Amino acid sequence: MERGNAKHSPRVDDEMAHEVDGIVKGTAGGRSEEFREAEPAGDDQPEASMVPEGDDGSGVPQGMTAEDVESRSRLGRFINRSVLPADRDHLRRAAEENEAPDDVLAEIDRLPTGVQFQTVSEAWAALGHRNETHRW
Image (cartoon, rainbow, N blue to C red; front, side):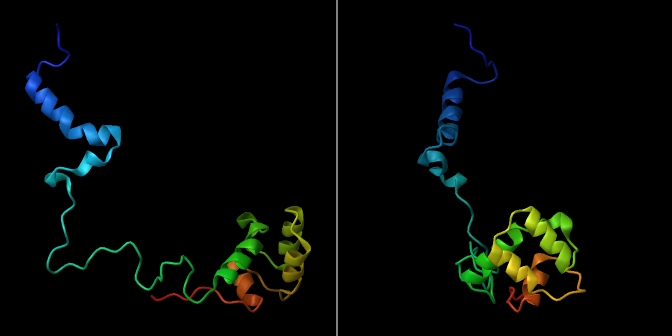
């Protein structure tokens, strides 16, 4: 029987195959060996966290409610970034082309005239709504 690998003995090949077996098959045994475990943080290092500092884990930015986020997103769905910066009339035409519902068009109609909006968030703020607050 001819082997495809002449660099290792059959025993070493079997050991190497066993080491990566969990990784290759995607089973839980992939990190069973101690050398595969992640090292803990050092004494002078902060603990790792999956949640950024100041985030409550809800996915809602600080300074906004979930309803604010959904409403601003809904407005942004009908305003393509390619039309920005734009004034109220240009935003209205773009939203009409994207078949925006009447309530979204009514919101756009409330925007002040003669103002160029760089982002949907700027337009949202001009309507009197809150955007996220940044902790720089």
